[in-house]
Image (cartoon, rainbow, N blue to C red):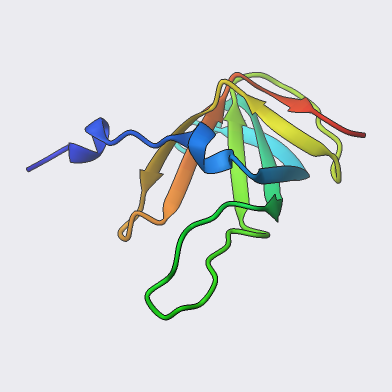
Length: 114
């Protein structure tokens, strides 16, 4: 079958429960083919992860602490590095050969603390 990922829903709000994000950088979001600027990519890292993922197969503790999430925002914004941020109206899609990558767009990214 083809295009099955079109019907896969990722609960980003559920995934983010117990997590806190810190901005690690801001870069232009460019179209790969034309080079046109589409908006801003806000790069973040998970700096608190209190999510209970349940037991792993080998008994080790599962965490996404320090994993990176990049938010694509379709406007020019400036977010300082080192601040806590929250995405506004995020939409996430899982992709990759092992379904281990996350593409996230958002209407905006708000600074929680400076």
